[in-house]
Length: 375
Figure 1 (spheres, rainbow, N blue to C red):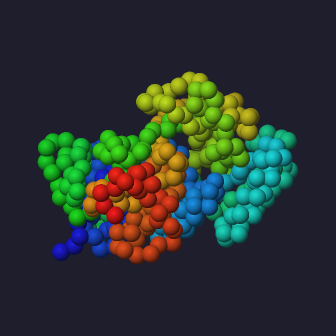
Figure 2: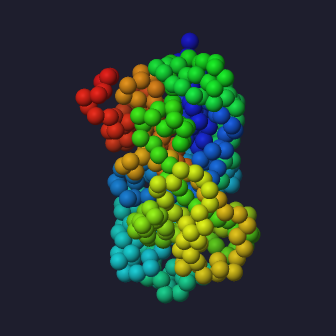
Figure 3: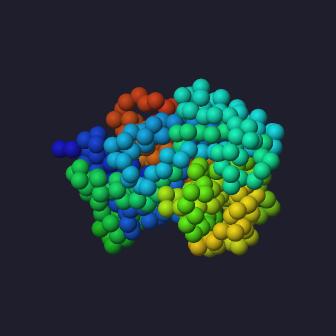
């Protein structure tokens, strides 16, 4: 009899984990309170990007990006993938030094990047304002539409023998058992919790919290932007008194629209639009791409990213509930790192050595040693 697995949450991380476990020979049920890709996955930016704020982060990104490359070779065109690359833009000499350092580091890891002068940046993307210091072009990065990816993988899971349970909300977890809102229960040998912000409700001891972001999308302007544009200030922007940090990130969509972000805002509890935060996001983008001032914004929204206290995902076994595993707290890198997350979990569950140090992402890091019930 096959080992049974329940995956809670059919966002990009949950669907990827479910599909990987099914491919490994487990009998998987994927559970979603609504429909695949409709939660956190639906309100974020769909970038597949090599971020290198830490070596561990880059390890996770590069493993996942290479797996995504194989996936899109097998399933071309799924998820509106655009292999546009990323153009990191340096506005001053200090940022230029960081940009060229990033290029060196990525090339050393066999992820092709090119250090650029200000003139080269301007030639690649004429819509950028003149006078920029330079930047770095990362060739292997991509942009996707995550809800379509999640929906596709959920359907692929079913085709490969898995079960998809929709419109049933899990409200309680125990060791190898979960309870639904309607009072019914389901047993499984392994339970993977990949429920985004719902993780904190199901498992309050797991330190996942919401970090708010604002996005806007333009009307269609085909041919005016070729690369994803990201400020070198991304991830390093100063936090204002109202816990807001902003750094430009503009993506060209396959239909000619421009998706505009990004910001991180703590101490927020809902998804309502904050005009001040949205204005800061748009102003940051217009600083790099002045033509945005004359483009029509057709929709804007806010969403919560599931974050962890130390900024790293939580991937691994629950220290106190046998059979329960976590895939949580990815913040803005859920799409990028979904494939690597699924592989890490599958390797750990199967007892195999993996390519990445599991301990760096272990849930145990948030549990005082003396309180652990299980080794």
